[in-house]
Length: 327
Image (cartoon, rainbow, N blue to C red; front, side, top):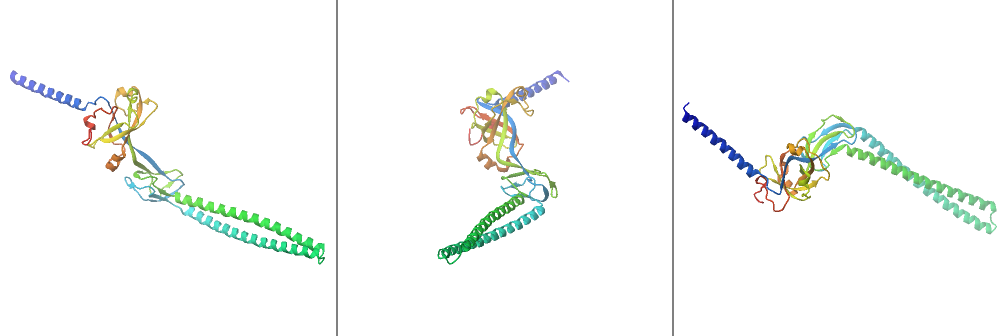
């Protein structure tokens, strides 16, 4: 190859390298985080809720699938209730018997009270006749004994009424308890959210506390970042923040919702070596309610992104955190 050609090739190569270096430098300058802005990377987290069986049983119905959105109190699954239903029927029958016994004891009390009133009237009549010497002392004594017997019978009947009422209340409580078990064997969504995993299938037998679904509560999506002491000292709950998620062009509005009071070692998933060498504080960025409503199902657990926090009100957002309607 001739010398002029070699020189031309080398010069062209140098120009390409220089151009690339200049473009990379310009990109780094454009992406450099301005003063007064804290930066970190993380993943979007949603509160996970386990829907579990309170009582053991066989799953007879699964009414939702992974990814389904559910409303609060929506029926998600059903356990077999045959055994509990028979217990409920038996408790209901016992309640009816207790109610009948309470009514019978009440009627017996009324009868004994009537007998007492009659015995008291007869005693008063005998005492009147005794004062007129129409009956003997023995007659008065007999009437008084009848009154005392009637009083004892009324007291015993009143006690029987109380016992019958207690039995009736106990039977009613037993019915309510079994009814609660029946209701708890219908598994419902505790909050509105999205089904993440269906852990068992129809026909599975679950133990007490056995997980049936794992669902995500989309009401409070947040990203966790970690910062050293010097950076955290200037932060406070409520500070403005932005999250730039991978795959979403517009940065999402957020606020600082939590600052840990104790330092910890940086988790393994933080990639910067210098950050792994020091103690850091955990900071949560919570997506604002307006953004949650606007983005809806776009926010998913595990989404990666970059979080930015403005330490000073006059600090300028970096280009990646700029919004078209805000600076």
